[in-house]
Image (cartoon, rainbow, N blue to C red):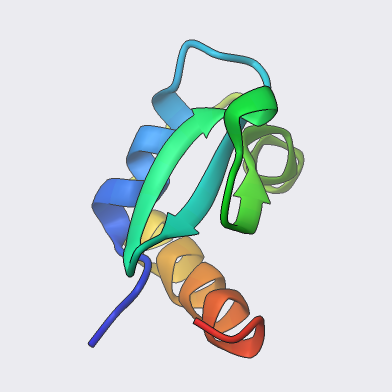
Length: 78
């Protein structure tokens, strides 16, 4: 079972909060402002923006990012 999918990556990239963070809480991923990040922090919006820039991200790239973040989550103990 995947922990991080395209929907979570899209939500993180499109979050209006510049300090948005993807966290794992109770087996689910949530995008929250950094100051409310409780649980396992997987990535920040800033981290992803550093990778992809400000250009729109297509479904293929979203899938690649989701795969990478899913691996990170599992490596962190998810």
